[in-house]
Length: 337
Image 1 (cartoon, rainbow, N blue to C red):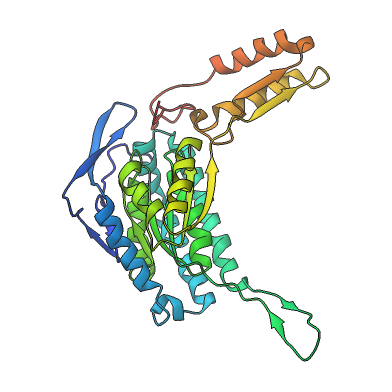
Image 2 (image 1 turned 90 degrees about the vertical axis):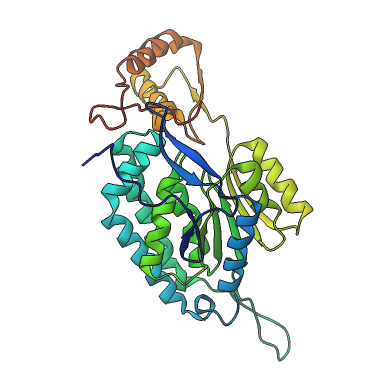
């Protein structure tokens, strides 16, 4: 059950399967968005800490390492074990997520269930990654073989902290990569707890590293690092451009970007107005509107415009706004304005 006074067990940087303070000893406060009160101080990673994390990830990726020599099916079993541990700790994680992010507790439970499913999907995928054979003229045998890219830097936003983690970790771990992961500075707590669970699951040292910190310091260090082979980022278009620039200027690392958008809905006169208003309402209010694909622009044909506005306003006025741990709350506090 929901418990807003949940204990925070982990607030340090996670490198090489150990929780450590930042080299600078700097910390930053993570805040409960419902009341603007500090939850706890978290160790603040910057460039030097990222270097340590990358070195750990590089060591874990060496050809003779435990991780590289591990069977693909064994990687999948480790990932499945992690998903089971997340399920075992689901109540605690949901409390942490709502405390740190502000989303209603029921939404956090749903996010965690989806994170579990994501990790289990990729766990099943781990031993099904293969290349192709290619017909070739003459006495030749041609084939392709898929290989992990190496150390992967991952940077996520604050709107779906634990679900974003699963979306980033799942494919990287399934393919045999090692990870340097930066959660959003607003919402680092569940990532650090799941890092502890990854150690309990049995992931070798250095495979998963979590460096909480700020974008201009820890994030920039990841994007520009010469020993990181790929960076995956979810966030704003403005920051995505900076990451692509840093990736190009450093070692031309591979980049995958999921950037913010303004997703439109177009509603015509011949569509059911009640249904349209409900769809539009859910599209823009889901996760307090903090959603990369929120339906944040609605175009309504003039024949039903007035009726649509009336119904949309009615739905919005019925929305229960309140504390994220109140069972009746449908719209919790915004984690960032």
